[in-house]
Length: 458
Image (cartoon, rainbow, N blue to C red; front, side):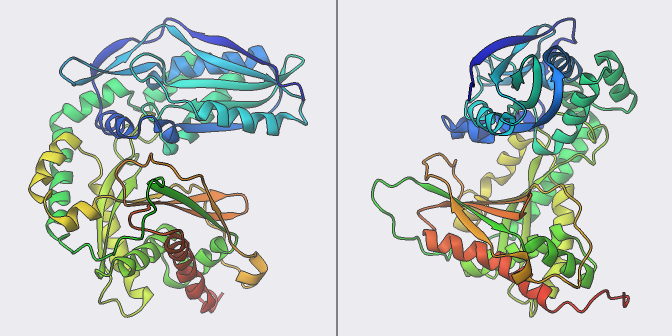
């Protein structure tokens, strides 16, 4: 397989330029990424897929147009001498396009390798544009494209907009047309987002969100009851496990139909029950990632808009799993409304709780439901055995995990639903992590087993 590598530059000129304060999301993610260095590449945001043999020049046209349309892709985040962050939007420059040779039959494999290569490099946030492109080419035709975004420029919830714009630009739409449509829809670019956040309306949103956080923190004073696991001297601090469950999508459909709720609510309730039981506290506190794209001007916006809200659920007096569903729903709605704020001000608000072991522990626990696919209808033919057994895999252990106790991710996969867990080895053995992942899965499967068809009799 000839995978000869070359790199060219994708230019952009005559675009909007400016500078100003960073947005709440830029500030939060920049500081989070600094804590992860040199492993901060793990939070790069990938987008890739097959292309039906389009000319390379046409693909380059689409990439260049994308740079022009989205200011976030030309924005550098720079810390000044006092540590204050500012965003600089460049009006001209270029981003690298990494080319690999591969036929249509080879494109998927070559593209996957290119994606891993480009994803595995950290960005220089102050000195380069936060995007890199890739393409698999044979005889001038492109069969696969790869785009890697820095998390300072994009998050997973912004990918549908970026993908749609890239397709339109590649097929002939002009950057001026696409940008005008976004402006007409009221989409805010990062400099406009920062201005809105500094406005009276933005400050009211910030104050309300921080009030909710303080209320949750005041009720979070639960003991850290989980005993530390035996730690091997010199071993890496973090492990990451992936449980791929073919049975979960069908099980979720049944549980949702029975209880007239959402799959997000069911997974969150199952997680809360499992982790509260593990901690022995009768409660679960999670930092819950929220897209924030329901706010004005952000539905189709790019940039790091997703932020964490604090979710607190008491599980101790829930006699059955169904009793957890309404309280999880209520708590999560409050969390979604309180996940858009100035993190600098929030940290000052929460400083009085910093010495409380329960609060410190709870704020190191994260949950991120990254699924985007709509669940299928419930099926009378579904069964765990027919769907297939779940598969557990492990990544190589690492010392780069920030300061988390654990992080749980839910993600769509072609063969099912994946639950991934990053765990601190000072708290979890591999056996602990496997047990918790399978308990979350098993909770949903057990509920689905009692399904009796549609509540309406269908």
